[in-house]
Image (tube, rainbow, N blue to C red):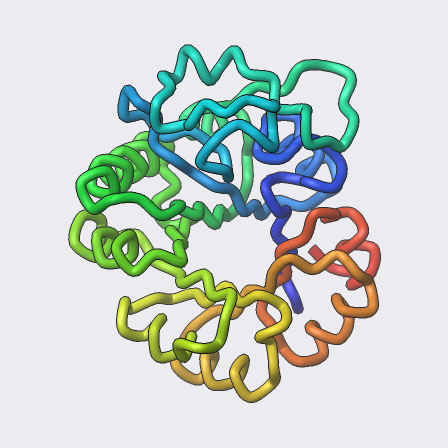
Length: 240
């Protein structure tokens, strides 16, 4: 059975990485979610993909220079899809508090080692507080982040996010003792999928929005798909 993860909630239905987007994912019957986390100026984990607000809110302000209070006032509907009410940048704590997902892929975007230590310790505390340490995998494309996660939160599973094949994704993931390999769908050839699985890793393909591609990747044997349209994926694959 190929599992389904909502990409930034349900990015194709509601503004990404917002509470309405996560609720839309749950409303589609999908209880697994992928989201992005960055560190605010006041050292809080906030759920947002981009380093700045240009795409999401038409602002040049950078996330790392803003406090949680300032980010909570930002309306991120600029990038669509259309939504009737304002969609704010939530903290990770708010999402964990309000959204009952069964499993989370928490992607940590690239940052310095000093800030990575602060963010990973913050995430680890939240996972303990909400009792989800066994329902989370910390993912990143950053070697600095993965190395820091090994040191600061060795009890939390790790996953490598791989977009390109120039550095062998399977070997790189094993170097950081990852239990999950999140592959850009274009890297999902059967040989690589099976190689990762034989090494004990869960293979997750992103971002998969076309029904024919969903079926093809499921046939190849990927363990899960990350999609902007979790309801469509569920209808296509006939499974959660």
